[in-house]
Length: 238
Image (cartoon, rainbow, N blue to C red; front, side, top):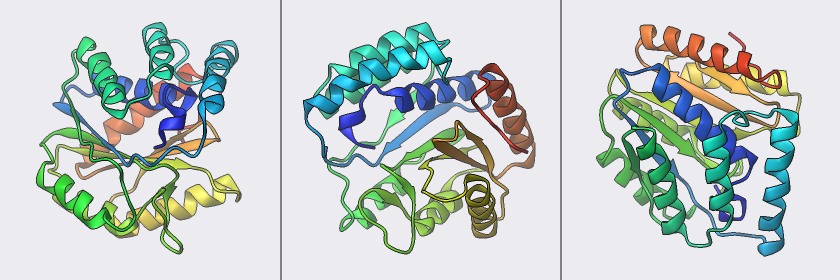
């Protein structure tokens, strides 16, 4: 993730989705947020545009726009400059929702020190948790940068979570056919972990979710379908 986009429509989507999953699956004891925070490439002018993004999200009925409390929280996040204040505000929101949240934050995330970053993540993974991996862009193997999450890192985290946990991965769609990309990436993740991913997308970003427990996966699939039915712009293919 990138601080230039604090409080934008993607934040609205991802945090509302996290809330929905946590409220729908009470067997998940906590939400573990792993933000791979990168340095901002934009000035304050970019930040100002996020207010318009939220107005458009409300008008167009984008994901999360029905959650008025979260919308108000997003407006507050847009005013935040410091990382610690941002993560404190995220923690406050989920605490108000009675959701236990662990935020793993080492700034800045760097491509060169990613092994150290994820080793610390491996050592502190709680049980029965929704583990959200939030890279700036998403998964990449061929030419990875600081903006990317590696499949090898997904595999290591998947191997370390307990059977009661779920992994959630943030991904921008690359400039390729979306259906083909989703099919290929899901096949890749399934081969890597032995678990078929569940997905949800607004055709701009997509979330991949992996569960070790087959019953949890089945329940998660229904949870995402219900959420997608709330917002016409979303798709959660089986």
